[in-house]
Image (cartoon, rainbow, N blue to C red; front, side, top):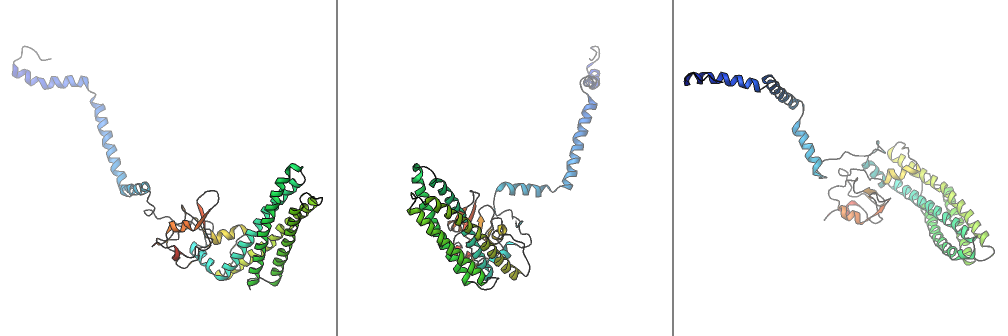
Amino acid sequence: MLARGQNDAGRLDLWPNALIDELHGLLDIEAGLREVLLHSRHAAQLDGLAEVLDVEAGLGAILLAGGGGREEVPRPRREHAFPSIDAEERLALRQHPPVRTAHRLLTRALDHHHALGLDLHLARKLTCHVDRPQADRRRACVLAHQLVRHLHADRERADDLAQAIARCAGAGITAAHLAHALDHARELGLVLDLAHALERDLDGDLAGQLVRCLTRDLGGLHEGTRTLLAHALTWVLVAIRDRLGREVALSQETVCQFLDDFTTSDLRAVRLSDVELEGVRWSEAGTWWPDDVDVEHLRARSDVIGGGDGVLVIRSGAATVRDLAGH
């Protein structure tokens, strides 16, 4: 405090010193200096980061990712399953006449094999019902009628397949292959006759024997279609090899994926104006079409397949991209 006996001028001269003494008692000057230096070093570190990082580019990437616009961020091609052959080359293979013909034969053979497998399952269920009490006869009648109807369709498929093989020449298709296909269709006709006889006489004494014979013969036919599938696969592989000039390691499980699956393909830079699209598999989330393709129109001419995972297949008659261009 200032002494009371001093004059006003002297007391004013001593005031700053007294104030400083009082502040020293209240403030930690060294701690304050350390804090100031800490902020100073932090600012220097930020300046150093600015020289290393491209902040504007980072902000731009964040804004693009958050915008959700499909056209803003180009997506790389995703042909992981067949890295040596891109989508454009696979589409060109689909257009090559020998490959297209062999591919259609393989597709028909696969469909026929699958249908016979379902009918074999149906025949086995019918066998169980025929051996059960009278209360199950109504169900047995329904199953027998379904089996007859399905076998009629299978017989038509077998005839169409044999006719398609007869129209083909080269690519390893021989008279022996045609004979095998014709024998298969004829044997399927005999199985169909058994199914008709069983349907007419489900309550007869021979019903059990008929259904067992039918199931046995149908199982043999189903197994026999594996030979047709093996021939068809060979024809496709030969046609692909002749077109590419090299072998491509494809199995029965992967050959259709190779030729049909474009669910993860970027097709924007591919010339598609005259490409036939029947049978092409695509997805709304993974396939990128050229700008002139009307995706809504394409969706209307496709069927959803799989377990609801957004995969579609283009139906017969959808023709080319030219027909699906926006107007």
